[in-house]
Image (cartoon, rainbow, N blue to C red; front, side, top):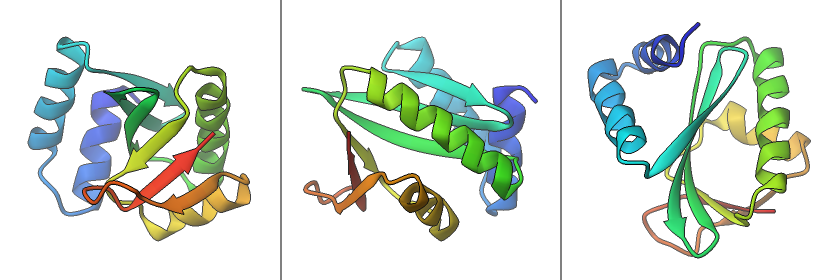
Length: 120
């Protein structure tokens, strides 16, 4: 699947408007404010916040086992980057449980607009 197909599927599965998300992602990528990583049928949008920090958004059309594989890949990429603190505005319960299995350090966010903070 293409990233736009994944985002569309994920939005529809969550009862949200895919057009809004597609337009937002396109604007972020066009303005070079973030990057999009893909593994299997899962994408990770990484938006730079500055000073080694980034905001993360996950969209998937994968089965839970394939999401685990994708998140392992994304965590490896995060460890290899110059970024060290990641923020998530919302995280589905199943994604949190997968991240915990990967020994990702999940913390309450120190910024009130985000729910979870990850440190690498």
